[in-house]
Length: 298
View 1 (cartoon, rainbow, N blue to C red):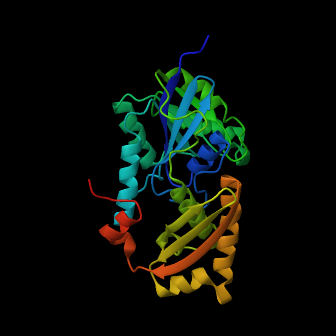
View 2 (cartoon, helix red, strand yellow):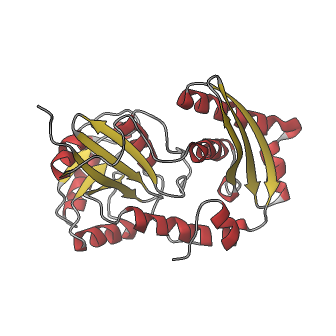
View 3 (cartoon, rainbow, N blue to C red):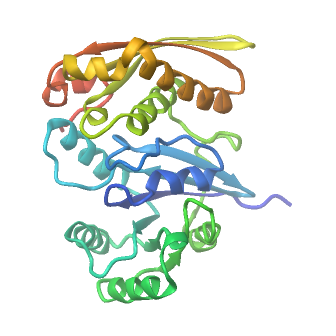
């Protein structure tokens, strides 16, 4: 006898650089979200889909919550609000701390008011002591009544499966939103752009990578290979020189690492052609932000 299908949207929220994208990738067993040690890696909500038995979990990886300094930042924060509407649960991801950050207090207040079940996820247990974990649990339990508290390591995967045990009772009966073999509704072009941008974040220093955007100008598929032409936009001519590197060395490295990830994801050979262009102050330009797939306007 077939089991009754259940489905639910689960938002992953938290401050920048706490490991939200790493957790999403670990939950799915696939790398679909950009991961970097630099904050604000994710710029828009990324959907990760996992179907286990009769249950379909739709995870929404959101940008790190921060005070916007540019119109791009405003667009990122807008995507957080959009992603967390009508979810069955919220995973509040934090690191072991001595006290709660005001941003986390705001998130707790928001979801408590909306009566959305919150599961506190204490990440990075692989680099913190049990005493630090226990102290963090005590600090956060004074702030709210969480549906569950799960210490884990998104990096190693230790404890991650407990999330399914806690979220499963919160799913609702109903037909799945996606086919059982689908892991994301993010277009292939967007995945390619995110992979390339992640390499910029990993390989470049300080402000340069946050002033970059990637668009896919051409994406041609066949059974044997995918040909991708991508344009990297930056804000200054000096940044362009850094991205290209001496004799094209940095751009070649970015392309090599990106191609490796793309081939692993798509399962075919990838030809990757990268170009670098300057668009001054694009992070405060409404039309350019929109052209890169974001808009800060309502």
